[in-house]
Figure 1 (cartoon, rainbow, N blue to C red):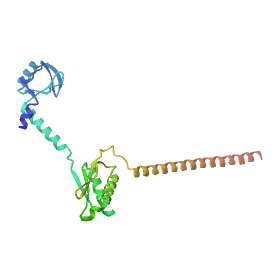
Figure 2: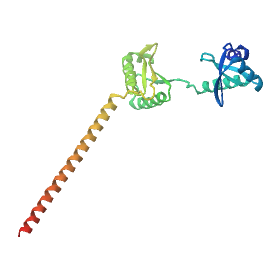
Figure 3: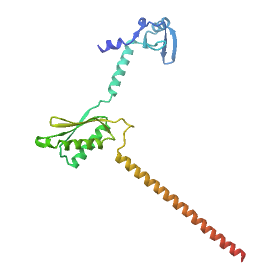
Length: 228
C-alpha cells in the first residue's frame, strides 16, 4: 500500500506529459525535448522519472525506477527517525511539599524541558487535604515562575477531581526569556564591573598625576643646581 502511494507521486516514461524536460544528473543538467530524453533513457537501460513536476520545465532524472522508489522510501524512513518525539513527563506534588522535595522535582522538570519534553505537574489532594487547594495553586504558580526561563505555561492550574494540573511546554532554544531574578543579578554584576573599571581608571590617572608631579620637582631641583 505504501509503495502504491509512493508510485502515484511520480510520473515515469510515457506518463510524462510535458513537451520538454530538464534532465539532471551528476554532470549537471540540460533541457531536452521529452522524446529525446526518453530515447536516452532507453539507450542507458533506465527510466525517465519526473521528480519535480511543477518546475518550468519539469525536472527529470535518468534512473532505474525501482531503485528510485527504494531511495525515496529509505529517505522518508530516515526523516521519520530524525523527528523528535515529544513526551509528557509528570511531576507530582502534595499540597504541603517541603522545600527539599520541591527543589528536587524542580531540577527534574528543568531537565525534562531542556530535553524538549512537556511537563504535566499536579498536586494530589488526599482526603481532607482538598481544603488546601489554594495552597496547591500557589505551589504550582511558583513552580511555573521558577521554570519560566525553560518552559511556557500552556494552561494555568485547574482542579480536576482530586488533582490540580499545570501544563508546561519547552521554550525554543535561543528565545528563552530571562527571569527577573537573573536579570537583576546580571545588572548587579554589570554595575560591579563598571565600578571596578572606573576605580582602575581613577587609580591610573592618579598615578599619572603623581608621576608628573615628581617629574616636575626633579626638574626644579635640576634647574636650581645648574644656576648654582
